[in-house]
Image (cartoon, rainbow, N blue to C red):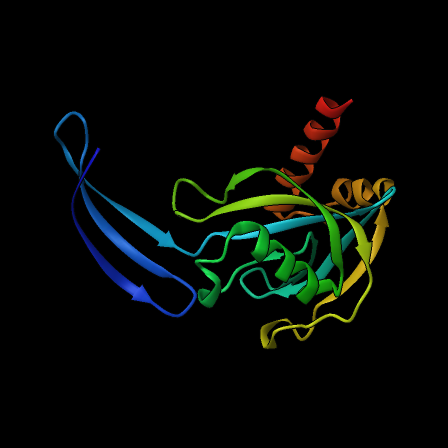
Length: 178
């Protein structure tokens, strides 16, 4: 597929929506709408059998959701992924971690967005005060056992695709680590 032309149709500090004119392999013309957002980091903070989740209102859904700490911001687009992960964990939960393992990469919505996320496992945790951003003022965080977390998934209370994919990466990591 070849991009013939590209134009931004909407932009703000957090994202750009662009429309690309393309030529398909068979020579036919088409368009793609793409949402460009900075890459993000997601952190699975684990203390023994416990996982730290955050709960916040997700405006596009009109719902509060439980998920793993994650995020980015325009002013952090160039941060190394591990540094971004440590900042997000500290800001959203107050936790700092002594040990970090990168578990993998997640494409958020490859059919419409260029955004990608790095998933990290954080352990050797120390509690501290959260440093919530203005947009996160309603965010709360709490510990859940793995069984409780899986119950939340089964009951449809954890539906965040990135958190579900990250948990799958954790399970694969644990399986391969013995």
